[in-house]
Structures are given as structure tokens and as C-alpha cells.
Image (tube, rainbow, N blue to C red; front, side, top):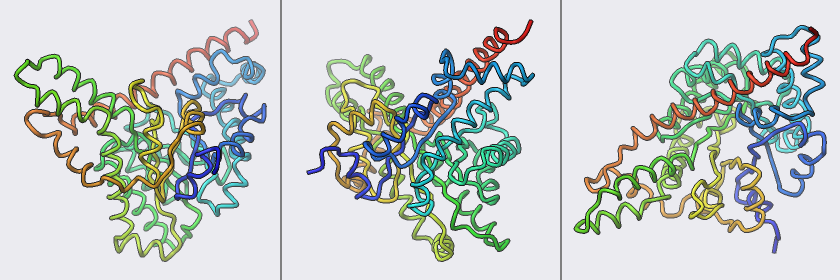
Length: 382
């Protein structure tokens, strides 16, 4: 019996990536240790992660001071810090990238969140990030807004690996999958290779349950003593919607890879765009702290976990192939949201979440820029 459940997940066709990065992890050797001990196959980052990593951390001070003395702007200093960390992380994961022939071993970095609704700006920054970082296993994160998906198609056509982030609805996932396919088809039409291009569709989980649970709690406050059935139905779906939604998205994934268009690309050695489960830390302490891992193990998937969830899973995950269990119940649960005694508008929830999601990256990015600016002012010659 394997003592660490994380090490058995890959046997079911799922890869574990970590949602965290800082220079301490790289320089201390801890990241390499976690690859061995925790079975990490890749890594994701975002502006919130870099704010935590850089703000107030003296390990970056020498480089910040050197950038300030060289007359670099705050934005240039930020990029030099982040790009350097991403390059080193890519180098650490490079053996996995080589061993898996480009299936795993990726490190994701996000384009500036302020351009989430700017197609051309996203294309330009994605290409620039990819070229300046200069690692084959870097993956550029692009938000799954309508403007972002238009950029995804072009960036894939340029031969760049893409992590499409902030996906909440099954419809947005489906649009993402077809954007990836169109990008590959454009390369094939130009006679270019597609085997070394990889993409994941980051499908968010806990934020969905947090939003819907809040709506349910508000409804429960207004229910009278004559509405016990309604109360029971509302309580029964708390903490259940995100996993049901993800299982339906996986069924859509299976449908897409059976399409003639995908089969034509697969015949040319294209890599499927895997579903990546994101936002996997359980926010409600009443819920199982690894439920977004246990319930969504399955082939052709990735789960990106924050450090606390990695350790929790190493301790007590119950690993089995559950991605296609209770699928009928998942469809029924999602359909039940429209029932009069539940009446939760899932489209409205998803629209709220994408707006909030962008804001949750813009705010820490702006905060980091401010703290870097303050640090530069302190270190710059008078």
C-alpha cells in the first residue's frame, strides 16, 4: 500500500500541479524535493501568488535595488523578478517535460490581468512573454473572456503553450476547446507542426460553491416553517454544484475529442487540451478539505493544488477514478437549479465569477506594483 495518495493519482491519468511559486522554494531546493515526495508534474502561478511571494520578502531586495540603480521602471523590475523565477522553475521541471514528451513539466505565467478584455494586447504580451522567458515548457495563462479566447486561438497558432484560466461554465469551457482546435487547424493549414504544443483549460471549482452557498443561505433566511421541503432541497445542493459542473464539463471534453475535427488533428499527433481543476482549496471548513481532489480524479485531467491542499491530500486523499461516477446525478443537480423552489440562475453566477476572478488578480497586481514602487523609491539614489 502506497503511503502517499498523491503518488498514485498519475496511475489514473491525472497530473498534480502546484498552485504556488516563490524564490525561496527554488533556492532552498524545496521545489525539487516536492517533485519527488509529492509527485508534482507542473506548476501554476498568478498575480496573487507573486504578490505574496515578492511583497515584503527580502530575498528579492538585491535584484530590486539593482533594477532601480539601472534606471528600470517598476514594471520592468517586476518582470525581471517574475521572469527569472519562472525560468528557474521551468528548468527544474524540464526533466519531466522531456520524460513525458511535453505532456507535463509546465510552469504557467499569466499575462497582465488589466488586459483581460484586450485581444490584441493579450496576443502581443503572450508572444513577448513566451519569447523573453525562452523556455519550451513555459505556459502562458490567458483569461477565458470572449476577448481572451480570441487571443488563445491566435497564440496557439503561433505555437505557444496556453493555460486558459478563469473558466467557470461548461459553455465557456466548450468555447475554449474549440478556440484551441481552431488554433491548431490554422497551424496545420500553414504546414507547421503541432505535436509540441500543449494547452490546459483551467476550470474553477470552490468559488462556484462559495457563490451558490451564499445565495442558498440568503434564501434559507426567508423560508418559513411551512417550507421544510424547500429548505431540505436547498441544503441538499450546498457544496455540490462545482463538482457536478466539472463532471459535466468532462463529458463535454469526451464529446469534443470524439469529433471528426479533433480526430483529424490527433492523427497529426496533436495533444488534447486537458481539463485542469483550479480553485481547489475547500473554502468552507464544514466540507472535506480534499473533496475537489477525491471527486475529480480521471484520465486526461490536471489538478492544480495550493500547498495546504497538497499536504492534506498526501495525508488523507481517497484516490479512485470518480470523474465519471454519478454523472446522471450531476446533470439532474444542475437542472434542478432552475426549479421554482431553488431558483438559482447559474448563468448569472458564472458571469459574476468571471468579473470577480479578474478583479482578484487585478487587485494584488496593483498592490504589488505599489509596494515595488515604494521599495524602488527607498533604494534609488537621492
